[in-house]
Image (cartoon, rainbow, N blue to C red; front, top):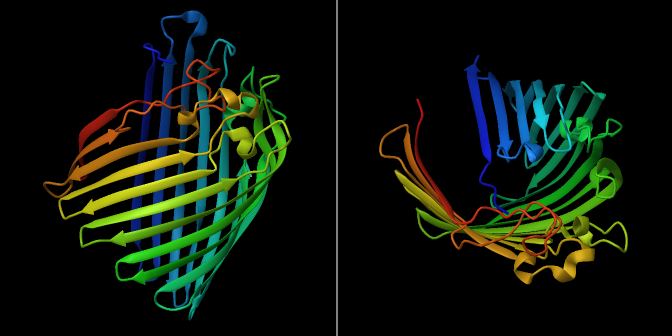
Length: 371
């Protein structure tokens, strides 16, 4: 599906100010802003799609180091504003939400043992107060090998579109809440080879989903995600290295009528092979990515081509720094010009409901200068 009347402008910038009071206490103040402006199908008023969205906020972070303790605390604030939204089903949508949060953690190190507890107090403009905790326990076996276990609670308020869109949204949505547990091992096999492996499990309540029957966002209930990954990195010399990685994800099916992994939308496997070259003035990387076992919905799986169930793509990135502060870059994406979709659970041939192809072979070149 191609649209010759699409105009999209995205602007994002971040400003950070660092100040060191003394050898133990330092401060970082960060301000960020992101705007997204979209005008689609501008030649056809009946199907015009317009959006004016802005997110901005700041973070104030203090770091105190003393002996075995590194204490980090601070305050976060962000505000989302939908200044305009219009499509053929939604005549008008505007609104704002904001979130304020205090946080603190203490990274403690006692010999080979490390422990980092943390807590975050949030106040959301729509969902009130929420406290979430986290903790990481690590152990260093020797100079080559260490492992860790971690626990983290999370809370995600519905996005503005999910809440306030007059056609799709529902103001009765509850926020997603849950916890993630993880265990990992990192080891250096030799001077040029490292290996890591991790296992994770995420349990969520009030998962926010989309009901295709009535075209409304709703709380779909509880969900469990289990997965693991492995990564091997080899340095061949001072400049050239390669990394091979695999990630496996499994989400049980909610009924006999759907596939696992959210009805086949999330791939069970992902392969990554990256070759890196890094020198004083020049660096580059070639990444080959494989998305495997993503059949789409069970009801339509028989109509999905094998080339869409498993997708392999390659991307190249090059950087050259002729003088201090200047970077000349070149990116070549989708080198083999693969046609695939990454936007919908309907994985059938082009022409299926909501089938949007990802960009074909394309490149970006430019110059960056840092003052």
